Length: 276
Image (cartoon, rainbow, N blue to C red; front, top):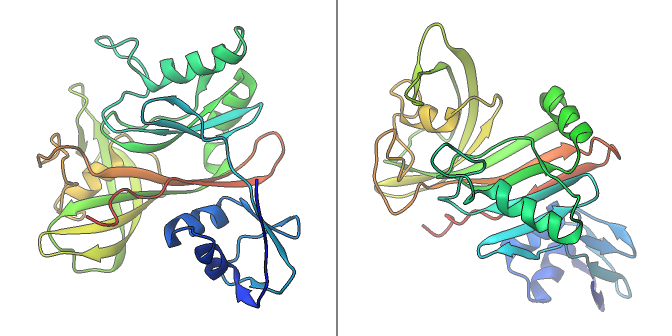
């Protein structure tokens, strides 16, 4: 834990930047309750520090499971990892071992040969970002049975083709998954709701923050590409309209109530697209 003594009146985020943290990193530290002032966790960016205040930075376990996979939170009940793009969350008929589940499972077994992990939710192979696993079946069931009550907020960063006009809006479409694993808008589908906000516009693309209210398969991808949604597919989404070196969709935030301790936890993984 890094420790600093303040020698002037200054707001907290400015103090963190003076300590050498980037603005993005400072925001992440505050959001994740990693900043302690006089031993108390502070999340307010504009918290006013006084001379002689002690600021401590608490580090989450950032141990690498393997190349490009980081643990961003871990306790006895759950583990949250940062998945790279182009990696399956769970096995398919064609690929059994090269999965996030397999890698995280090996990691927990390296500490305890009897340890297990359980899938709570998934990201598409092409999507990067935060994935939560349970460490026992009881916690898995609590999450799966109460997902909408436990998970308060999810945020995704994306780059979509074209320049969006609306700053913010809500997309509502009914989606149906066909046998070819592609998702379509259909009258007899299930309602899917996504809120979005434009972060930055360019001449030929837009950085967008997505906030899914529901959690349907390929929801964000279809909401971006469909003519009754954004009509602007996510960059690199080959299934729904564009080609690139990768699909530009990243799960950057998840906020939830811990099912065992009832603590409110917010985990972030900074968007890799802010400078695109």
